[in-house]
Amino acid sequence: MIRSGNEDNFFADISGHRGLFVVADGMGGHAAGEVASEMAVHILTRELLQSAFEEARANECVAEALRHANAAIYQRTTDEVEKQGMGTTASVLLMLGTRYVIGQVGDSRIYLLRDGRLRQVTKDHSYVQEQVDAGRLTEEQARYHPYSNVITRCVGASAAVEPDVYEGEVQAGDVFLVASDGLTGMVDDRRLQQLLLSRSSPSRVVDVLIAEANARGGLDNITAVVVQVNSVDDDCDPGDGRAC
Image 1 (cartoon, one colour):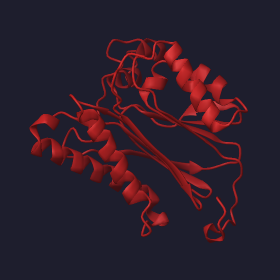
Image 2 (tube, rainbow, N blue to C red):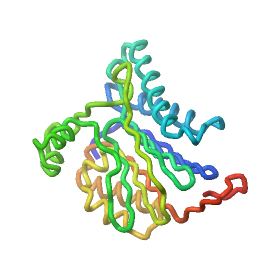
Image 3 (cartoon, rainbow, N blue to C red):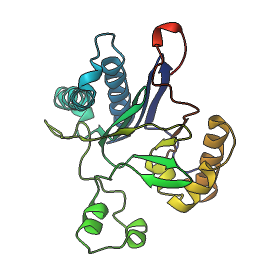
Image 4 (cartoon, rainbow, N blue to C red):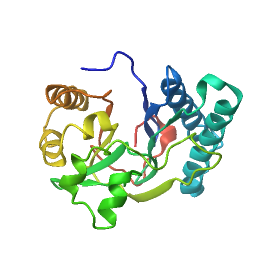
């Protein structure tokens, strides 16, 4: 509702038994934020969807892909003066049959709705999150803090970055949400849970989430990816043409 440009980028695709979902929220000067987020999404999808991808090393591969994206973006900031200071968040959800792997840098988030309860899987790399961890701020205070949009780690701002990596088992009925802070900064977790509990299709839920964030002010670009797990098949063979 406020910004004329969009610095967010995303990717969502399921092929065989592998699903990849990415949200990147760029920052840093005129046009540079959208360049950083586009580069991150391109590099992450290229590396995590390649045929040579080793599922046994999925955790390492996700972390390596984020580091490679960081190196490429940082190199561009050193080569092009107008791109100096650009960077991006990156939240990656990789689903491999009955398991998921998540890679995280920045304050875009990934949530898991399971058995009616919503849980934030990732942890923000932000100033206010550090204050919450130190006991200096409550979650509610952090939400409305004037520095709530200050992040402490992003892709491309420095020569090296260390991603957080999470993993777990996928269950039938799970709903994942991958979103930029244009959504989570405007809509609190309780309301997110109510909206994700809807029996609507994922595309309809996304529309409702974005409408809700805009109705509350829409202060930033809003990106949301909703993934509903209808079933989990341990014996699924991706070669038979089914989505597992």
